[in-house]
Image 1 (cartoon, one colour):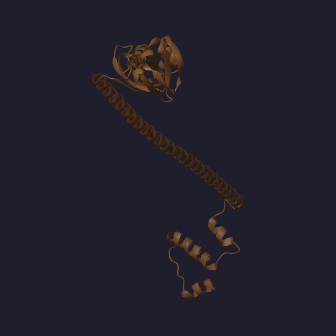
Image 2 (cartoon, rainbow, N blue to C red):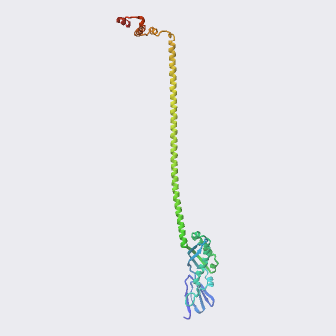
Image 3 (tube, rainbow, N blue to C red):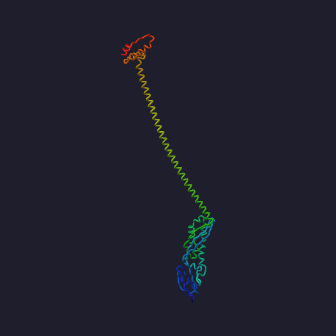
Length: 315
């Protein structure tokens, strides 16, 4: 009615009230009446905004990857932004231009440029494993970008949710990774088997060394025993030889004594010696006499010996 209208903005909206081309009032969360035919209302949202993105880029080795994430920003200088883009309201409500809707697109274009440079400097494998490094690099580049600061915007956050290769490359990488894992598993099994074989070899060597040491000790004991037996036998042989020598000397002494004893009567007839012996036996003497008679029987002729004679001789 009468073109007088009322506007009430939330605290997250910066309001600029132009009247006849001159700012009459401005600030966040204002509420006031204004005369529509001579007024222009500019509303710049101050709240942070999240903008999702998905870019397809090429790595340094010419492999295609897809980057998905989210960019968070806010308007830090609403007057500066309102001077560059049209955030004014038309009489029917809503913005008079598409500039507010295209602001995220402008920001994503800047982000896309920085993201392309970060990915293009890395090969595929490095790019797939460097989401955090790429995030830090691009975030710093956005902070220093003139396109962002000229619009009065502030970058609050950047997150890369995923970096994915094409399905064909992903399958090839999976197969290669699977083969590498299998190869490492085989190498681990081979290493464990080698370790087990080596351990068994060391055990066998230790057992053989122990057996060899025991056998050497036994051989030394046998050699010591044989040496002791040989020494004992030598001692026994020496004792026997000494005993024989002593017995031989004793026999020689006895023989010499006997020879010396018999030397004076060596030329006498043994029969006479027996008869002259002081301890001679009568029977032995008579027996020797009869033996002598028997030896001279041819010379004697006939000899009669009566029993009485024999008894008298024996008595």
